Length: 349
Image (cartoon, rainbow, N blue to C red; front, top):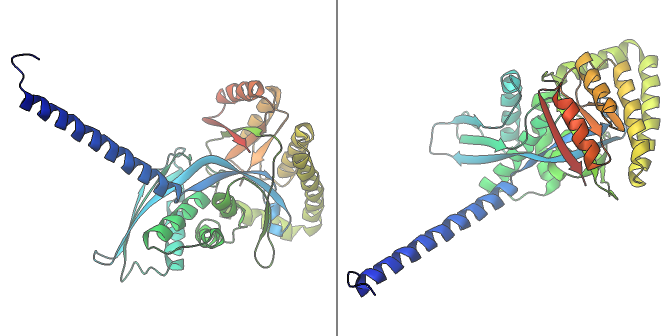
């Protein structure tokens, strides 16, 4: 031992090191607790594989949740000034949050009303949204937001809720964004996985599909933010103006989605890709695709995708491409990155 270091000093150093270790363990504990809490407040994004717009008319659709999610931190008080403060830290394509703000405010209000929180007279609510789901038309960002909010309120109040009850609360919020939503987005945001979804006069019917092998997807944004309410309303107007035309498209779609479900069950990706191409053609006939989407779809096919289509609202938003291998997924991603402002990869499993 050095003559300049006594036992008391050594004990002091050892105690300081122990304090640092305890502090590090406490930080790790808080991080673990925070991760568990955030895990309870997630709403997943989604990609519609088959069924854009047709799903509104009570026929089956196939939808896959992506791994990316929105989360929500919620503070509710009766001691502060009544009102709602929203901090939106979600990543987003340019102008998305500006264009969607009014609808989002309505959606948040509907969820708070569903929980019985009067923010005009009694409750002060602070909401902080985050996560790694990039907000873009077609990814189900609105549903991910209101489902995350519903989970956060259930945790904060606290008010234990089943997954079905969370889904129902999310559906109420979706009305703020979509008027009369199909329910497909909030169901995917709540339950995750690959789902067969069908709207009915009562509760929707959904079945979680078992996939034999993971399905590799590349999806890309046009950078255009579309209003779901406006596009759905325009399709409805066209349907009412020419019922025979719409019914013809609907019957073609029903045949496609039935074959697509069989292809998924049998892990027949080649057939699944061809059916995606056919579904995109129907979306073109329905007038919900656009040049930007069509260009990305063609580029993906040229780069090796075995199927590609628009996904979601259309007239902007997203497209997706089916890529059977890691190599083809990388090739399609690289091709789309030359054209699209944002490109992502995911795996449905």
